[in-house]
Structures are given as structure tokens and as C-alpha cells.
Length: 317
Image (cartoon, rainbow, N blue to C red; front, side, top):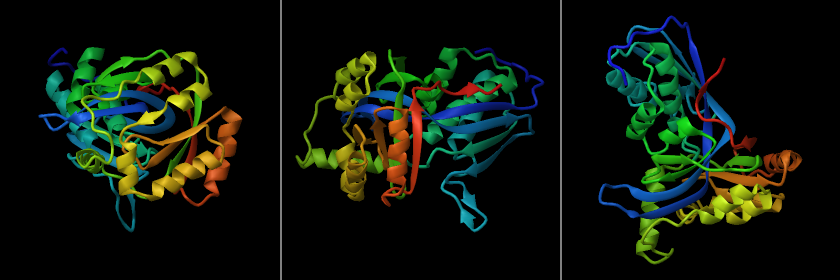
């Protein structure tokens, strides 16, 4: 990445950041570096946050929408330098040799702590937006390298579509997907901490309550189903090694999964570390019916019909 780049004259750069699901999440044992080895298949869906970057003096960050609080109290998402968006801005500025001057605004639609990587998507979108605003001319590999320093899910936020994630999830490569799939996402109750779910999985494995492993479960069945392009084959291949731990921490998720299947989902699973439940519908009309039935079932706080795959973080014209 070139050093000493100068900013452009743009007034604002708007970037759309999609949520991700894991249609396969294979989790290996805890590594010496404190991470788990993963073999995961990321899937970007049509539920987006929006990041807007404008010229500014120093860094500032404003938040609105899901999880950002109201006049009656603070939200779950910080608006200071502990936010991944702020850290992404500082990292890009340091790498490019420019001043970290920007007014950043994040409009959130992706639920917080829902297993949908909203914070990671926002960080990826920030890298894209500020690369344009500051004129840093970062290459794809430059941004992916910075994204990996920010978090395991951030590189996929740049790539989007469908991708295989390895390492701790930060090494991503696009996957051939022959179709378009329709899902209903049900947000069940309050968020779950990802570290807590990983810790619970380790505990369950140590106690022999779920099978111990020497490495992450291979994603071959899901990859084959994505190439085939049919909803029925994908439904049969969905897999999440973290689901037993999420269910143990939040037993009510069992009811949510049953409700989705009873309402006509081809399959349902906990997305990532949860507590969002992803229900696969046979087609668009099936998703509309499924969303309507789940909205009235009383087990989900929020229900949204989405499609995918969709592109990763990209500038909105």
C-alpha cells in the first residue's frame, strides 16, 4: 500500500455491509494461540448495515439503529475507539501513512451479538469507505491483510458471496454456488457472547457430552450442495459444531428450531454462535409464508426474510 496518500474531494462515501451466516461451521480444538481452528462456509445475505464516511477533523463515530440505544439509555454498541469501526479507520490510516480524519456514521440493521457478524461487516465496510475517501489506493490483498488483523470474520466482509474460511476463519477463498437461496432469520431473545459459546463447546467436549475432535469437521457435503444449487440438498448438508453449546447456554433455542421446522422450513440451524436461527425455505414464496408464520409464533424477537448470496462490502453509487 502506498504511503503518504492524499485524500480525495468526495463529500461522502456510502458502503453497504451484508450480514453473514455459516452454512457450515466446523470447529477444531483450542489452539495454543487461544483460537480454534475452523473450516467454515460463509454465506452473505441481504440484511445490511450501512457505513458512511465523510471528511472530518480527527475521527468521530455516530451510530443509529439496531442495538445503538435510545434516549432512555445506552446501547450495546460503543461509539468510541473500542468499536471495530474506529479500529479499522486507525489501522488503515497507519498502514497508508495518512491522517485518521473522518466523520463515520453507521446505520445498523444487523442484530448485535446475533451470530451474524454485524460488527465485522461494519469494519470491512469502513476499510472500503475510507480507502475511497482518503484515496489510499489499497489493493485487495492489502485490505484483506488489514481485515485479518481486525478479526476472524472481517475478511469475509470484504469478499462476500459464498466463501470457505480456514485458519481461525480469516483465510477466505470464494466458493462456487450455483443458485440463490431464500432464508428466514429469527432473532431469539438477547445476544450470545461468542467467546462464551466457544468456552461452552470446549467444556462439553472435555466432559464427553459432545464428541471431541482432532480438527474441524470438513465442509465437503455443503460445498457439493452449493454446487448442485438445490434447496433440498443444501438443507440436508447444513452443519454447525457450535450449535450444541449455544443450545446448552440457551435452551429456549430448541423451541425456536422446532418452531421453524414445524412452520415449513426445509432445515433450521443456529447461525454461528447464535442466538439467531436461520431457516431455509424452498423458494421465495415459501420464505414469505415461513416468515409470516414465525412472526406470529411468539418465539422470536424479530423475524426477517433474506436472500443470498449477495456481494461483500461495496460502495453504493
